[in-house]
Amino acid sequence: MYDTLRVCLLLDTVMKSPVYALILLAMALGMGACSLGKDNAAASGEKNYDSLGPVVSAYMAAREADSVAGWGLVRCDGSMLFSNKFPEAPSAAVNGYFTVRTPAGFSVYKAQAEPVVVDGLDGLVHAGAMSHGLMPVTWRGKRVALVDGSGVQRMELTAISGREIVKTAPYFIDGLLTVYTQDGKWGAMNTSGEMVLEPVYDNEPHFSERIAPVSRTVSEQIDSVTERKRTTYYLVNSSGKTIFTFPEGMKPRSSVHGGAIVVELPSGKSAMMGIDGTLRSLPAGTKSVGEFDKDYIVWSNAEGRMGLADHRGNILMEPRFRSIHIADSDRIISETMDRIYCISDSAGNPKVRLNGFDKVKFMKYSAPGTVSPFSFVGEGYAGTVLMDGHGHRIGAGPFKGLSVRPTLLDDGYVHTDFFNTQAAVHSLMAKLTAGGWGDVALHSRMGPLSDSIGEKQTRIRSLRFHTDSLYMLTLEAIAYSDRPVATDSLTDEGTHIYRTDSLSRVKYIRVEASVPGRKFPDMVQHAGAELVPMGFRAEKIRDEYAVYGAERMMVIIAPRPGLEGLFLFVMDHDFYKEAGERIIADAEKTFLQSTKPNTPR
Image (cartoon, rainbow, N blue to C red; front, side):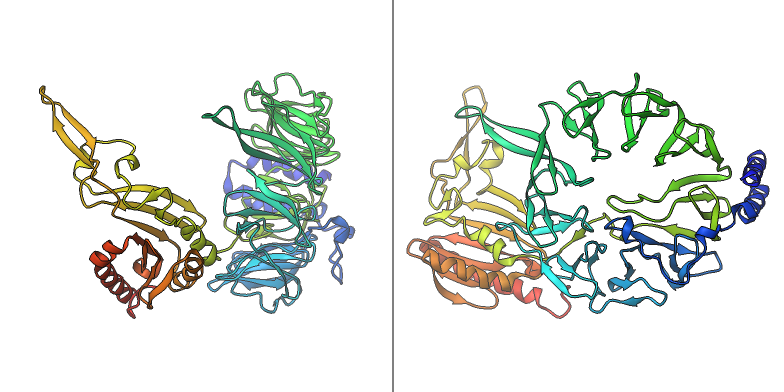
């Protein structure tokens, strides 16, 4: 330890010279006091880390040096499980599996000395991490699926009450996988596929210690004309039960740790609260709260300097640090204002000064819900090194790169590009009535459809009366007339007066349904199943278009350019005789252009 401190202090005096700093840092990393201890020696067989927790990141992605082109996985003792296997950094190995991104998509590998792809788990659109024996993945055009370590699909995440699950968390935490539905609501399911939390919440339930803060917004009818939205915040447990309802004006501002949570009071100030609703003291002058656990709270003052306190509000380390991170019950990583890192005890007494590093990180809890056997990682001029819990360098290195990311997902979620054609067509056709579409009937007056009447309406013969954006479906409805919507007249003073033209009435309606991909043929097929029960009969069914007739109305289904959705024309029989052939001719032309060999697909 003495040698470590002596060299680190020497480094501190010469760091102004990058060349000397590089040489001395390499010397420090190579000295006997920083060598691999007996307890950290590479084992002949792989260790079992199951006792650490249910989601264990046992191996970190590593690139050993500039001279090594590829990436491998490093053990927590600094030895390589394998090296130089992949051109890009893989994910860390979580519960024995890791992912690699390739031009063809994600591939899932089993973590072993000679890594192999899990059968069937390559070319994936997205891949999460293995937890509780399950990993969420997606194939192109498919819903999110849960697969096991053999690549066998255990379940598909189907729609919930007609709402598709469009993304999920990358892995189970506390036995729950959070899901997000097409209407923008969050819920959570267990490993059996049961929805423990119905997807009704505004925010993602971030579980920690089997508890998550959530919020839900509901509409309240104040009187016959006034409606108000009200948001309530809760703590729910992993069984789906509400264990605490926040008083009005109080909001959760963190996850639960050590049975406590950071809250924002009605005054806007931060406070600590136990999960039973009991407020806890914070040091005077606390501006904000950083990380915390069952023993300690990192807090900052108005100047942004950080200190350490216990849950009774007693100051353990005065606010004079640039950053403080909690390692465990008696190890704190502090960074002074002149960027010197130190491992100290909870009273701020230095144990090891880590001079020569630009950044020091504690890796045991490197991602939400995960645990790792790694301790400290230091980044400096010479590269990145692994350190044990005492700040001693272990293993080979310095490494060119280290990464403990549990997944390679761009935004951290498993997304699906699955499109439910049947549900989309139902959303479109359900608005058809016996005399029109939505709230607009054929031959009704055009004027009431406009929010305002002005000069523009004296020139146009159409009005957009409906827009809606659903998951992967956008609807836009326009009503057409054979005359302008408004008339213009002059007063004696020369002022223009615009009035709705009572003779301007809805002649036909065009609804545009925009969807991703070339879904027109599938949508036409599902449209028939919707229209026939509504009393329509098939008049003409072609690849290019479809015509259905009822007693009072005719419907033409025509393709959008690229076959990315459709146009729905709603009209009476007279207008069909007048304009039906023209609409059909345009549909045939659009279909032909969209199916030419050079048309992008």
